[in-house]
Image (tube, rainbow, N blue to C red; front, side):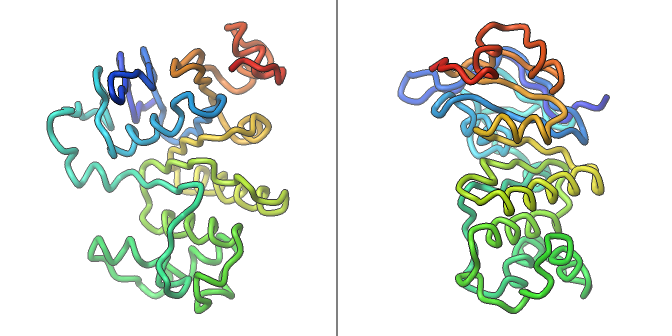
Length: 242
């Protein structure tokens, strides 16, 4: 199986305090990798490293076979192969269609006339292309953000709590879209979620972060039914492991 990311002995520190410690982690091409754990254990920090927003303090990251040098900026062509949808996406004060087209314009690409339309159709917003983004609901905003990411055809899509504070109907819609992006385009998804039921529904493999350490990584079935670490087992049972 192709490896998209390989992390080895990666740590991240702020002010001398370690906030992330990953001994080794591989993320595979075209998988959905779920990242779970309590708040403040380093999940979003790991996403920032995977999106090259920050370098690790120590250790090494390989992306698509390229060894990244923490002392040098990540080449633009590699950075553009990764896109992030945040918990609270920031949209332009323009139409839905203009927001979806934004990334394409930054890359100097023109909409063929169907790319934006098709993306909006795939997220169920084809009738809102000319609506102002500021008038959308929370679930609609997330779907616009997903469509904006989708048209770029990234190798990796990072999702940071994409359904937080959404009602069950919109949660189901977002999960269906994430699954479609993975299956139809072969996109690797890395999803941070507090909802272990969501991770169980979507993820092929799951990693558990606790106290900044990556405690366990396993196939979803094994992770939820036969975890190897007692701390993982306690977390899956819903016990307090903070």
